[in-house]
Image (spheres, rainbow, N blue to C red):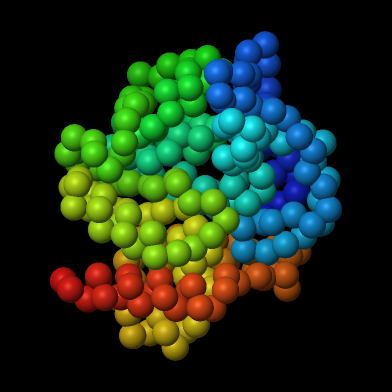
Length: 248
């Protein structure tokens, strides 16, 4: 069941690699390397065993920023499907999510905010330009005000903390956003207890995306391997979101 399917995950990575300009994967302090990923694999909401001979890894000053792993692919899947109209994205990274959103026929325009110019150079050199895409170099929190149908903050890496709430407040204050979500949202909600969620308003989009992803997960062969986030961080973030949502 896609996206919880080994063949799907391997094919997504292979297709991405096939599009890279492999003659030039180094841009000053930025480098994209292909590394193996074996053994216990993080699958966003579960862990399983797999073997990837080549996985793209984005490095900056010899430090890993992100990699196109199953965790990243599954974590982007629902947002790429739900994206529509004019889409705002914070964080370009390897460009995987941007490429998936551009494939969505319901998306008319994509604006990406990226602070590292060399990351932008890598993207254009490998994937070229698209008439629907505009990449803005600069601090996303200091951008000019805009209006979006769908907004996705893709700046979180395998963790959940109060910054997700702070960024939600900041971006919704800066822009006019109809539907906002962020990488890790489904994993966050699925880690919450039913008792805690019952007393807090949760955006309909978040509930729909989480229910759909979990339904697919329950129909996969990995349904007994669910791995929730730490309870303390989940409760802290849920409480903060609840306080924000209940203000309206």
